[in-house]
Amino acid sequence: MTENYKHHAHFRFHGVLNDFLSPSQKEQWLDYAFRDHPGIKDPIETLGAPHPEVSLILVNGMPVDFRYQLRHGDRVEVHPVEPGGIAIEGPPLRPPLPSPPRFVVDVNLGKLTRWLRLLGFDTAWRNDYSDRQVVELAVAEQLIILTRDRRLLFHRVIEHGFWVRAVKPEQQVREVLERLQLRSQIHPFRYCLECNGLIEPVAKEEILDRLEPLTRRYYNEFYRCSQCGRIYWKGSHYTNLMQKLELL
Image 1 (tube, rainbow, N blue to C red):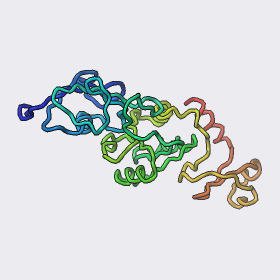
Image 2 (image 1 turned 30 degrees about the horizontal axis):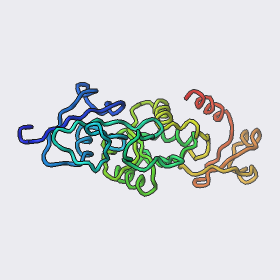
Image 3 (image 1 turned 90 degrees about the vertical axis):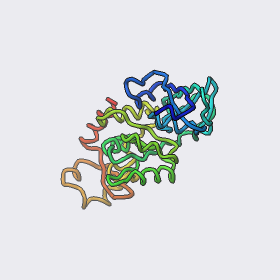
Image 4 (image 1 turned 180 degrees about the horizontal axis):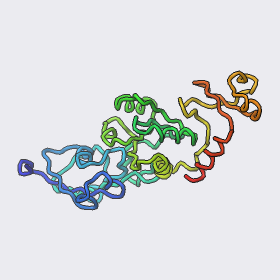
């Protein structure tokens, strides 16, 4: 098959970008056969690494951006986005991460969504989002995509997105906190766990008819979602959640 291609280049992927490669390809120079002079993003993604996970591209030792056109004999080293979304020094491949970080999460990560909202991060999610809706929302509102479907990150218009490697929700949230260095930005109980609306203090008198007798008797500090109206208070469930947060 490769005899039909007159050009060859060699690629090597570094760090966590090796997660996208087969075991035989990890930490190896990979031959890439091609025609003409494709933009360098195409072979990077053909070999398996989504462009939002790439921070620095070196061609023959020199940094380039995604506009570079591949040439015969090029030796290409591809580096990942560093923790905190920091790009290694070189031509910027995308704008900086939005601050504060805001997320849109694919349909497979509903439990991670609840964790992120609990920790105080604006996180859009619905169990009926299509891939197209996730991408469109990310672009329109400058959101960071979190996904377990690496194919989602290959959409050309995506600027910021991460493939969540972990499978269990508590491991996933640790991974996101560490990958984006978010621990200093944790502000628990800012967003509604159900709808992502902002939680605001509410006078007990306004919601008495919605409280169970024991809750009405023993608690006086309440909060209400500004969007869906769900009521929150610092009961035993609050203590349990705070203990879980300390273990993250």
